[in-house]
Length: 328
Image 1 (spheres, rainbow, N blue to C red):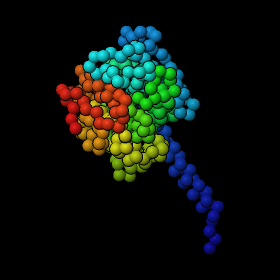
Image 2: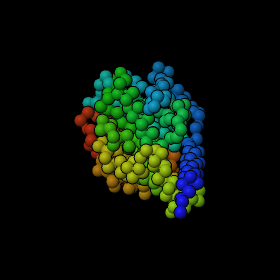
Image 3: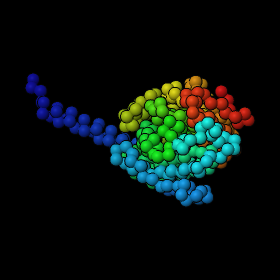
């Protein structure tokens, strides 16, 4: 019997094209469905009443020749000596600094409430817009690993900046930005401290919640969707999950989380602290967005950072002041 190889090959090619076509459609649909909304800044550091000469708008070189928008806020020549300020032994011509990264669909302006207390304590503050957010350049997609790449670019800028002590730079991140801060810190042993605000424990768990919300069953199609997302972002969820990266962070970590967080369970914060020997939990009566609820605890956060950035304290667990509702 003669095998009709011509029609057979044509049929196989058509089937392969169909599969590739469906995969491309799924890929584009995922990029649309998971794309972060770009929200414009509604204010800036000067709206806080800061001196004009202490605020600079920046365009920082980011990954893949993209530009990252940022504000750099510098402190006065002498830090405030009130509670929470840097101890006298830490005073020098070089200032410590904090890089601040927002969350998914947010921007640098939404992190402005942390600026005044940090600046009063003698810190320079760099507020970044991640790619696809705020006024930074666009990309085909945003992801937690890309947030971490943007943080690394910001760290490189700060370490090369005159007047900044490269050995005393800490990170503050919110939500996805917090997960990215932990990811960046586990890759960069020179980071002095991390304040993780409203971080989730595992992105795969959040993705499964999203699948359930959009009614995609996990067995079969849902499993493939998660594997495709991992392939797209170039990382396995298990490798970048905050509950895993926090184990590899060599600096003190303050995990800040709202007890009434309806987006990321408070139990995630407890898992993070249980996984890390240098982590402390600061529980707050608030939801996922802690801009307002964090205010009364600003002194505790600043004191944590001031202690972690003091000379000779690198890698040492930092206590949170009594009365801050911290737990271990």
